[in-house]
Image 1 (spheres, rainbow, N blue to C red):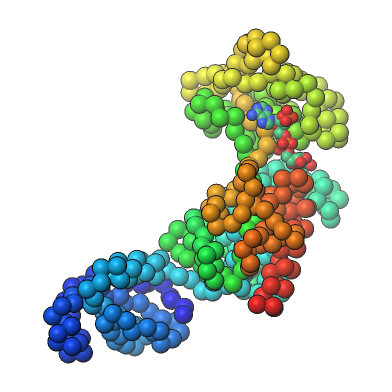
Image 2: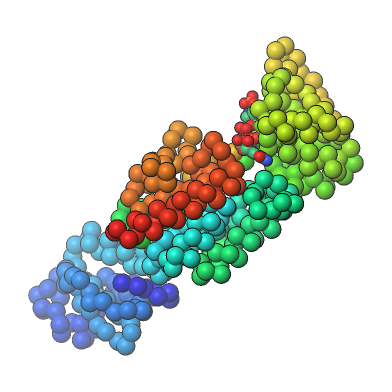
Length: 394
Ligand code: NAP
C-alpha cells in the first residue's frame, strides 16, 4: 500500500451516529472509540483485517478509520501505527543508497542506468571525503587530475542523468527487520526492496577537551577547507599517515611553517608522499611526541606536547592544529540492524553482501584497507550489480 503525504491523525472520542448504528448496542456500551485516522491512498487496497470492532468508511480517496476497543494494548498499538503512518511513508524503491561518496554515487549510476528505481540518501554533507580534498591525481581518467568536489559533482550529475533521485538530508534510522526495508530521513520514511550502505568514514579526533573547545577556532580536520585562513601563519599537523602528509602539503602552500607531530619516528605514509614532504622546505617533523593539550582561550595559540620516551613536556607556539590521525566508519545508525566488527566497520560476505539478505555495503563503511576513491567506486559498482541480481532472483 502506498501512502501519500499529508496524513492527518485525530484523536477523537465518541462515534458518529452512523458508526454507532453499525455497532452492536452491547459492544458499543462496553467499548469506547479511541482514534480516527484519515489518510490519502495513492492506490487503494482493501484493508486486510477487521479486528476489534474496527470500522471502515470511504470518502473519495480518503479513508477514515474508527476504532473502538476495550483492549488497551491494541489501542496503544493502533496509536503507534498511526504515528508511524504519519511519518509519511514515501514510494517504494528498488534500491535505497545511503551515502553519497564515490561508492554511493557509482552504485546509483549503475542501478539507475539498469532502470532500477533508485534514491540516494546523500546526507547534508554530501559527496564524502573527496569534498574536503583539492587535487585528486590518482582517479583514473583525469590525466591532469581533478578537484575532489568537481569529481563528486560529476558523479552526482551522472547518476541524476539516469534518473536516480537524491535527498540531501541525513538518514536518521533504518529498519531491516522486515521487507521492504525502511530508511527514515527526519519525518519521511523511504521503503526499499534493497539497500546499499555507502556511508563511508569520518575523521578521528584525539579526544582532548581543548580540541573540542577550539574546533573551528584553529582546530581542524580539513586543510583543504581551512588552509587559506592561515596564510603566513605557523601551523601543526598531527599524524604520520597519508592524510597527515596531504594536509601538510596543502598547508605549506599557505602557511609560513608546518610542523608535523608524530608519535613514532617513522611514517606510515606512502613513499611518494613521504618524498614530497621531506622535499618541502616549509615542512618539519617533531618525532616521538604526542599532543597533551591545545593551548588558547578563544583561538589556538599553541600545543603542549609530551615526548613518548622521556615523558618530558614542552610547548610549541602555533596558530592552528590539523588533526589527521585517521577515520572511523559512519555506521552508527546500522548498529543492532546489521553485523559490524569491533571498530564498527560493516562485515561483508561474498564481496558486498551483509548478513541481512537484500542489504549490501560498499566503500569505507566496510573497507578499512584500501580506502581509495577508486576502490570505493569499484565497490559501489559491485554492490549495484549484486542488487540487480538479487532483485532478479527475489
Ligand atoms: P592511517 O594510515 O591510519 O594513519 C593515521 C596516523 O595517525 C598514523 O600515523 C597513526 O600513528 C596516527 N595516529 C592514530 N591515532 C593517533 C592518536 N590518537 N594520536 C596520535 N597519532 C595517532 O590514516 P590515514 O592517514 O587517514 O590513511 C587512511 C588510509 O587512506 C590509508 O590507507 C591511506 O593510504 C589512505 N589515504 C590515501 C591517500 C592518497 O593516496 N592520496 C590520501 C589519504 C589517505 P601510527 O603510525 O603510530 O599508527
